[in-house]
Amino acid sequence: MTTDERLRGFVEAGYMHLANFRDDVISPIDPKLTSGMAPAQTTSNLGPYLAISKSMLAESDELMREFEEFKQQSNASREKRPGTTS
Image 1 (spheres, rainbow, N blue to C red):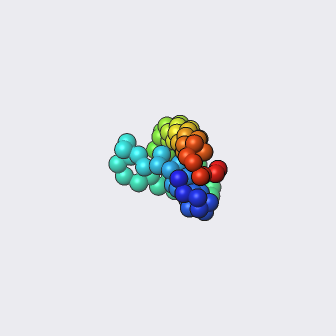
Image 2 (image 1 turned 120 degrees about the vertical axis):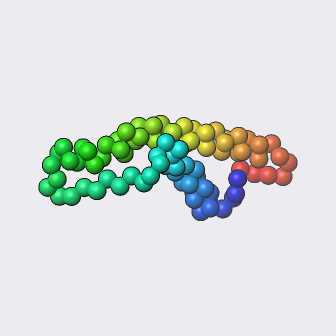
Image 3 (image 1 turned 90 degrees about the horizontal axis):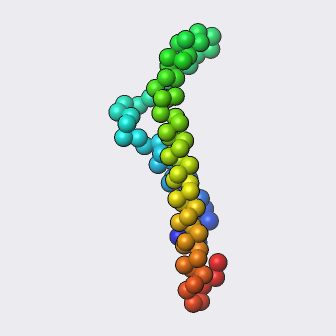
């Protein structure tokens, strides 16, 4: 793990966004919404996104847990090495 706080933030944010890259989405989802759109049309336009949003959020949560575990293990490993500080 890097000691550069800025780079560390970018790596962590990027890791969380891995959930957005889906094998089950073949083409881009573009839910265009306009002002005054009928509720049925809004639901139809959002349908493809809503169908995968729960699994994306669940995967993102899992990635966050994995990354937190990695950080804890990395910090513990660093603390055990002679001449290092946390």
